Length: 54
Length: 312
Image 1 (cartoon, chains in turn yellow, blue):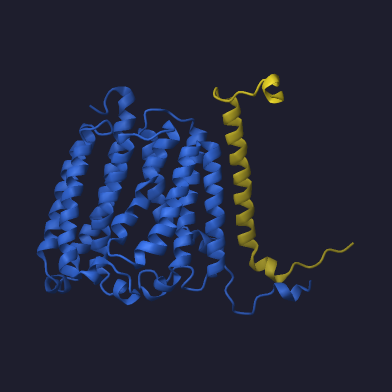
Image 2: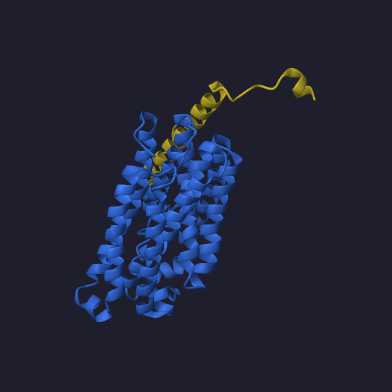
């Protein structure tokens, strides 16, 4: 199996693509941190089984 | 699909990440972040640092989104104004359609994420602020009335209220006082700019006060709004968000600001032309420090309150 040679466009846009990738990764980390904070802080409660059924 | 369909003609500019960032008006964003943070920290309820960081970030993204929408709509007038001709769209670095897409996408993302990280009221207020800046100010007021920046200034005044609502989930007098500070500060700040960016607004057919009512009337408006602002800014020193440090700073800065406005109102165009609008430029620079220092002192009072030093 051979890999196709890198297109000239990919070289030109490398910086932009890396930037977008890093931003997406940072967004994922932020959502994870937010979720963790919300779940572990006192104001978050899982609904009771009965309430879910209602 | 053939690879050729992806290629751009030789010499054509490839939009860089920095160009998209410039669309978000980073300098305006920094002011939004600062005032929203002050609103959040001055509020009586404390917020978890992660939630505070995320919420302020989403407010900043919302502000950036409204900046991109503004640049998309105003690309035609930006192109003829010296001050804005190098912005990403008129300079050809970002296609107008991409600016619109980015603005809409970031608007939706920021409002939705703020609703999740903080509360629905803060998210609703952010959505209204984006709408107010992009539609009410940019699309309607800016090209139709010389009161454009007076009413449009409200868009820039909402961030501290959003910060306050992120922390408390409700409105209060103190939050609206911070709103009023920025709201009253905006007209003299922009009219000073309009005075020394002489022909820019004329060339672009934007009905700034300097264009519709003349430069003399603009100078009178600067002093009137500065007097009202001074009363408000010093008066805020006696409220729950004020205190001795704020009041001392406000007295000094407002005396300087008032003097600058008096100097502007007493000058005529010949004198201003002769020294290259020195007084107007000085007033404009001072106005930036003015707002930063007032909000900085509200923050100082809030930070000192837990140790018994801030506030009254």
